[in-house]
Image 1 (spheres, rainbow, N blue to C red):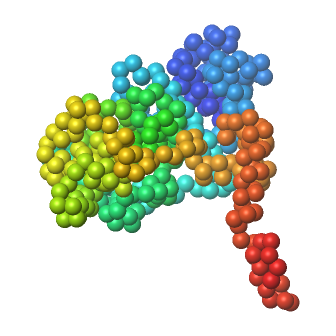
Image 2: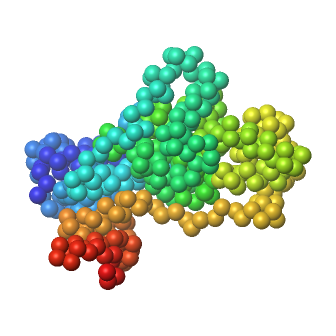
Image 3: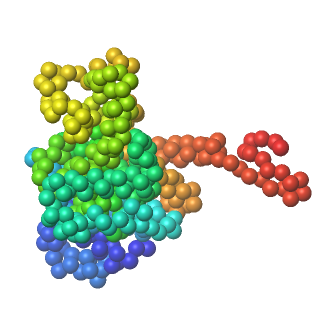
Length: 410
């Protein structure tokens, strides 16, 4: 059974998330404020009736309050809310959902006896805002751009991707940076967000309604914030207006260099010119397709490297050039993928392991996956089946000395 102190901490945490004062919540459940204070301190355990009322007003389940292994990772008070005007309420809701999912992720690791070990990229300190700022002219824009580019090259080397397209980006960053990456429904004006706590590590939410190229850019942008100022977190608008903010200059420069490394882009530009005697819009489309970025991002990158005249993209936009139609006519199929899963594969795998080991019930398994019990059962059976089909079962018979693969006789 969960201790009264832990229960009180969860009630206090949920109350703060609901933006209620102790006096407000006490009045709602019909007790004195001093009584609620005692409950939150763990000095008084609420009755079953009070617990049901608390859960109702705090918009959480009784189960969530009583879960033995629940983790509450509070977002830093320095959290930077930069959502576009009119989206603050929606952004706050997504932040809370991301916080909840990150907590569930940490709970599953705790249940399975896994301790969060800092990932390799987490130990890089050279680009931290409190360390790099003074040595880079107090965050001057050009210095921040150079610093972002340097950080991108460092991460590319760490991921061992050379100067080619950075593919399998999510899997790489989950492993090397320890990012917990979720694809969540968000207002279209919000591209992504990052939260951090010592308990949870770095949790990133990407707008699952955006195209693949945009999602890759958003993830790269948030990786830069992970390196520079993870404690402050961030809500990333789809269109950045604060280009002079050192943090955003650093992050945008990082994303640009990380996804389209300058040396490789210049080399491929030269190769196309040598092969065809000129460089055309078709070449831009080809390079954008190769590096899995948008036509706009690649054109602006070529302008930035002074390989195309400044204003090239703006001129094409004024002429209402349709990049998607042009790419299709060239046989460059747009990068289409099924809508990404909301939860990371590792998260689902940990939940399935916890269920298989009877550490959580079927109802709890479904709750972790945010689905009904029938769907949860189907997910579990599907994973067990895939493990049987893909896994190697090794049998050792010391008398006959043979090793077989699952389903095959020696």
